Image (cartoon, rainbow, N blue to C red; front, side, top):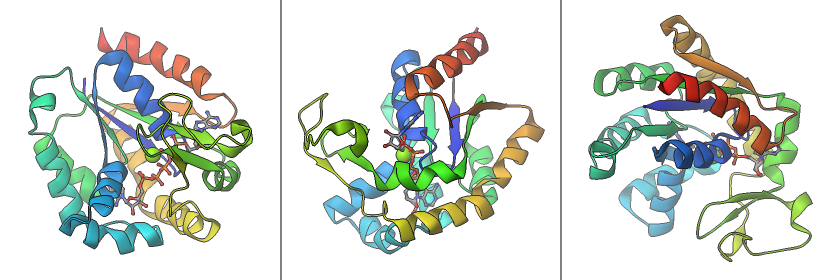
Amino acid sequence: MNLILLGAPGAGKGTQATKIAARYGLVHISTGDIFRANIKNGTEIGKLAKSYTDAGELVPDSVTCEIVKDRLTWDDVKNGNGYLLDGFPRNLFQAEALDTFAHIDGVVNINIDQALLLDRLCGRRVCKECGESYHVSTLNGATTCARCGGELYRRKDDNPETVQSRLAVYNEQTAPLIDYYTKKGIILNFTGSEAPAEVLFEEIGKVLDTFVK
Ligand code: AP5
Ligand code: MG
């Protein structure tokens, strides 16, 4: 089963992706994580991506599409049960490019009230080691990850100004993909505003369980 996770910044794509990937044995591929790892390691891709991610803008399509196309040739994907694309595609160009090198079975679209996003993202803390996400309001001052003990950090693009620009990019370039995949008949819509992550995951799981059979 090959899936796409669609949703605004902070909708909960990464949170749900970890759970979905574990439950169905899918390879989790997050383009945002790939760029952050490259920036951290100082690679050529990282040097190019940094100014875009820092500004909340999209890294050029040619680079992003090549990265994903290549990633789908790795052994874990070739020998696995399928994959979950988190944060790709993000515009029509990327969606059409993906159609030329992949077959997608379903698109999990997380709709969210955008008024919630500023607080969610500016309060987010992420584990440097395992990538688990937390919100400061539930950490009780903890600075390390409850799962693996890794140090928690705040993403550089999780500040009010950059969040506004990420949101504008989403509304302008990514939201039209809802229509694109609705027309293909493969969209699965969920609402991520009220329900805690575990409850939303149960809802998604119920649909995906029937979907895979
Ligand atoms: P990326 O890393 O993909 O960021 P994003 O799309 O802005 O989304 P986030 O990762 O911020 O949010 P999320 O939906 O994963 O939410 P999360 O689960 O963490 O991209 C970063 C940058 O990389 C882009 O701006 C761009 O520059 C570049 N890039 C990436 N892909 C690209 C592409 N295809 N093309 C070009 N450029 C690309 O949850 C957020 C918070 O909410 C957490 O604190 C979490 O604990 C909490 N939370 C989650 N679910 C719930 C819930 N149900 N209730 C309450 N709180 C919740
Ligand atoms: Mg994410």
